Length: 348
Image (tube, rainbow, N blue to C red; front, side):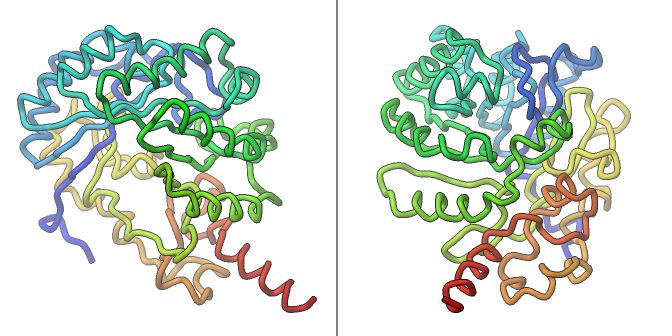
C-alpha cells in the first residue's frame, strides 16, 4: 500500500480554463463558454508556489483551450522561475507563430496539438472544425517544429475514424512531428451522449484496433504511443501501476483537485485550492484512493485472466467512464481480442 510520505507529483495536469473556441463532441471536459469561476492570475501564482513546494517538475497546461488564457505566458514564465517546466495541450487553431514563440520564450518547449482527422472533412466530422481551421492546425504543427519545440500530435481514435488513423501517421511524418499520441475514446463529458458513443465506441472493432497497434510497432520511423483509454497493448500487454495521487494530480480551472485526469469525477474530488492549500490537499489520504484500490475486487474476466498480474485490470478511470462501475472488467481488452483470435484459428 502506498503511503502519503512515499510520493512526489512529477507531472501534473492543469485545466487552466474551461473556455474553448471549438465544440468537439467527444470533449471529456465539455469545454465551451467556461463556468465563470476560474482561478485568477494571482491565485494561479500561489498554486504554482505550492506545486514547487511539493516537488512538481512539469505542468501540462490543458483545458478547454489554454490559449484563451491571456495570462498563460505569464504563468508559464512564473512556473519556470520556480523550477517547473511546462507543456501545453492545444487544438492549435489559435497557435500563431507569434504565440508559439512567446510560449517557448516563457519556458514551454513541448506542445501537444490535437487533430482527429487527416483531412478537413474527417476532422470536421470528429471535431467540428472548418476547412480553414484544419489548415491552421496543420500549420501550427509545422510552426512549432520550425521554432524548435518538441511536438506531439494527439489523435482521439474511435470506431468512426479508426480507418483514418493510418493516414494520420502519414500526415505526422510529412509535418515532421516528434511523436503521435493516440488517445482512446472514453465516454466522459460530452462523450457520454448516446449519439456520440454510437459513433466512437469500439465495440466490434476491437480486433481492428489490435491490428493497428501491432502495425505501429513495426514502424520505427515515428514514435507512436497509446494512452490509457486503450488499456494494455501488445506485445507484452503490461500496464503501469496506478500513479494517481502518487506521481500526478489533476487541477480543474475552478481549483478542484483530483488524483489524476482520468478520475475527475465528484466521488474522487479531494479538495479545492481556494479552501485549503495544495500542500495540505496533497497529503490527504483521499489522494491515494485509486492507487490503493483493491484490484482483487475487480470483476471477471479481468480478475480471472492469466495476464491480470501484468495488466492490473487496466486504468480504473477509463473503466469507470465506460461502465459506471469502478470494479468492472475492462470492456475492450486487446489481450482478450488476441486470445479470441488465436482460439478461432485453432478451431480451423
